[in-house]
Length: 363
Ligand SMILES: *Cc1c(COP(=O)(O)O)cnc(C)c1O
Image (cartoon, rainbow, N blue to C red; front, side, top):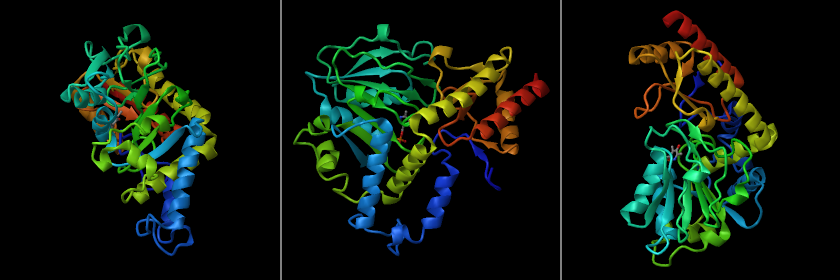
């Protein structure tokens, strides 16, 4: 652990790999020999173009996707994608079908509902979003333009552990908080997006990885910047892109490749998650996990303590031990440990030890 840094369990913006931060620091004043900082360089410069191409290639390599998919860098966060998806792809005849598995899934649905072009395919809201709707719960209309999932529910701490069979309806997923955390058959998805500030970089850029044939479909009448087709045609350079953020995402993707790719990330993330869920399960009910075990997230571990008073104490004492950002989202309460790719096993071990000590001292 680096001096003066805490173990950062925040949900997003979140911890980034330390080697990536150090590399960016070392290159900060002179980007690729240009004599300019990445914050100063033109997005039309050849050094910039090479960097963006490499970032796109590394992301596709990690995901095992070919030329039929395109990587876009957009802005406005995942929240803007919520609105752009129905605008670009849904209609009254072909509504978007939404699986409600948490707050962000609901927000995505609301944007389509507002235009009267969204339907609900399943929901686990009754019972407090403790589980991921399973295949037999899904009701997908045959005329749906797409099925939209939120693959990892950052707030509730639940995650898909299967890819739904949509009977031929295109599959869309918000993977903001688990993108590039484990191998998935990404070719089963037509459209994937992620606000990068959870697992992939600093806030300010949204990663889209989608089938080219889909991106081409944007209706003519939409404003230029609302059309995916614009970003596809102009290689995400129709307007000025957030260069620094894209540069950082490229560095993180490269770091993942160097570490051994998604299989290695999955191994590490499972080991970290198992350690924390193990402490919860062995606590005789002192720690109560929010998610049903079969739907547990490898990225966001959510749990409650016996009282809100103890929860406040837990947050304060954890921070004093150098464990930051463990407070849960207000809609669930309790604790949430976000253990993305960049969180080290060492950090999770420290948190697990702290949890055990805290229970002994406050049972
Ligand atoms: C954080 C988050 C969002 C919202 O992302 P913004 O980039 O802030 O708009 C959407 N979906 C999921 C799953 C998230 O974790």
